[in-house]
Length: 403
Picture 1 (tube, rainbow, N blue to C red):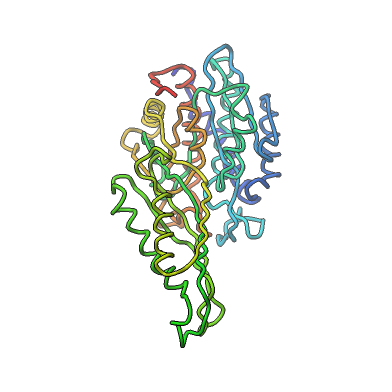
Picture 2: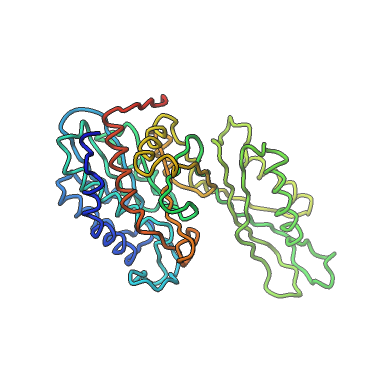
């Protein structure tokens, strides 16, 4: 595209600002729906670019609209803002200043890349045939996207497609992964209370042991993943907590369990997989077999992220121009991501920018207290935002699946 001539040089000239933004966000992380300083900084930046800015959507969400030179499509570029309740263990100069809170998932990088992309694109507004919505979302870790949508983030203007980048340390630094179809798993959490009858561990026959029922349940539900659902429809059931008892010689009255169910397909009343229905059936039958009562609660957090084929093809073409075909890879993961809420409504692509580098502490997994990224990839993310936005608005070989 002629309008993007010398784009890489322009981004390079902003690299110091790009890194400074990322490090500032990293030093002052804030939890979901509490991103006050973060959102104020973002809103101020966008206002200085002359954008139409909305603030306090879903408490702390921000949108900025760049209007181009004429009528045309509208594209949404999204970054998430929230940090995690985690004490950072790095000793970098930009280590978290907020005790017990850390950007351990890369959202600091997402915000910085999108802001600098907004600056570069603002200088080219006369060449933009349409509108660009820059959306900064709170509370991605626990489902802030839906609340932003409910409060009108996709209205006036209404986007025609959406894109999001996630820096990803499991992928080698500088590579880009853009895959059509399911790429991030649906996530439902569960809480179970198994109620028995307490007693003495020296006379267990006089009690009803909920611990034994819990042990049976943990192993029994694993049959769902391969014995009831096709292994080519990935389903992952994990228990993250089990709490029971007050002393070694007492059979407790109850056991509390909690965990997650993840899957890479759309699940609903009409789907053949029905992982939650199967899970509930086994909980009921195991507890009845052990003469226990039970309570079971599900909390849906997000649905499967499913990338549109046509929009993903556009991203892959742009990635080939930015990093070269040899560094374009495929990736599918079972982590959850509430960008799925946008992808349910809009033709979308959620893709990954490799940011891991072995040998120098840049390969820790996401949500680890020593997580960090290779900052050299930040300009690549900026360029990808710019190229995908231009390609979509200029209708370069984009075939959108009907909604």
